[in-house]
Image 1 (cartoon, rainbow, N blue to C red):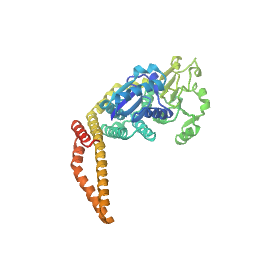
Image 2 (cartoon, rainbow, N blue to C red):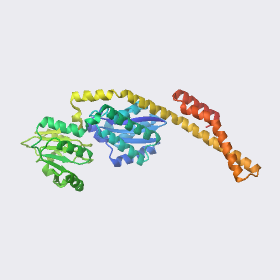
Image 3 (spheres, rainbow, N blue to C red):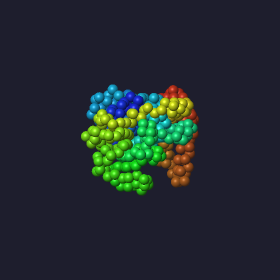
Image 4 (cartoon, one colour):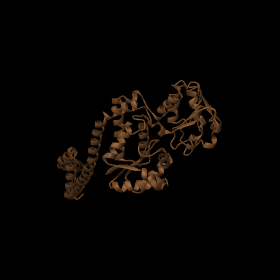
Length: 412
């Protein structure tokens, strides 16, 4: 079995492409079912603001990659995305998920949110029966390695996220947030992070608006200094505030160009952290409105970027070791299969033998149990050396030779 990843990410695809191939939870369920029906053995879908990636396992990986590429084009019904799609196979695919988990491959180097998103992707795939032995092992190992890297590099001492960088960018541009009215739309994980960073920066009045009013009330109970705005009043307040931060899970734009005043006497800063985007991109053409999306935040300070890349690069050798260990484990699955066949064959031999003995003799139940155990023990002794050799062989080429010989000798 081989591993591949196929999809789109911020390195090769602009946000206008990534939002076209974003998977909602409903789409993940549908896509997993479709791909499993196409005889792909395992599937995990990782879809975030930075990436839309499908990880697969198959015994014909080139075929699987072709199927997933064609699936993307048909499922999202858009041929223009074809030039942006990427694929990685085996070691490159394994290295990719390790780097993604550790924050190597994020817009914000070392960001914390991706680890939770990878865990969620794995959990979803397991619930849908999309992933199994190989991808479960791969993702768990990548998550474990990422935690070790973050601890060693002390990345979590200065946690970063897209929300943090977004608020930082606003602060750099506006300088003084203390007298500004700020509206946060959507209070999922991204919105809550933005709200947290805003409150740490001595801002003026903060308003929160969410389609689910009960969730807004829950946030208000925790942060009494925020003011809840009814979702129905959203279009009224957007022209009264100085800053808008939007991070909803809406599948379509929630603020359109026609919703905004065209003649503004003061600047409005809008930070769109959603995927797909919440804000009509044409709004940026209105005078006195500055609109930032996720891709606008790639301009993180060079000094911080270099520092974090240096810390993370020090751990690349550790990732190489993890990849080697995963490949050794994956190779051992070949031995497990032939060993299972050997155990089945031995058990059949035992059953045939004791059945013959029982027919030809008049043994007590106690004697039958003794004979059964003796034959089973003898067969296990016969297999022991082969089992030990297969389990201890770490060189893939030699293991393949042993497996081939055993298959030929025993007709598995």
